[in-house]
Length: 254
Image: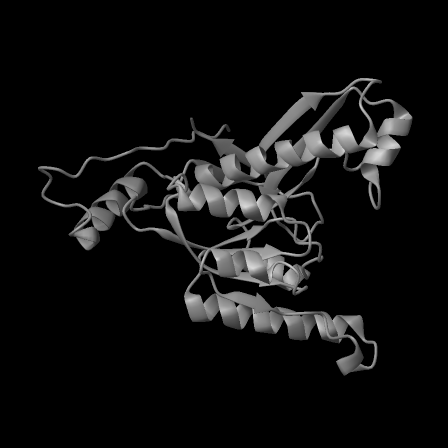
């Protein structure tokens, strides 16, 4: 048995049911879904702006890019908060008038127990999410591994970005090792975060050629450019309800 995926964009003008009469619309579509044995369906309303919370650490290029795009109305959403495990990028949030929540991993508070410190930090993150009502999270180079419970709770609405050397060059200094290996393509992957680290459903990937003439610094610069664009494209597709997740894959509509 195969699967059929469909996305419909509905113009409510002149309709008896619509955005101002959601119960009637959803009841009608629910009846149709039952009639045709549809496994799963949902309705998103385009004039309901998503609330996007951003998680970041010390690396700032993706954060700057998202905030500038948002200020230029390229991303239709609200950004009610920025969370970081370091205080370094608070000045950026201040420039854009967005609340900045500094939530570090307080390992010393738990006598070196990282598991308890992680649970405490994520409890505080959850409190911020609830406070502002965020429905989407973006890990804009947030260099902390989220717990399985957190990833499961926020599956299909937490977007992560990283270089596309994984799993070939995991860990520190991937561009140095890619340079030593003589790679000819570098890339970036934007995906939904899952309990399996960097293995979630892929939304967007992008690549750029490199050559023997490129230094490590050149490769890092090109990699950052790719990460900016891939993350913005993935977030825009998510905000426009153009991404369907099936098992560990996505269907992304144009």
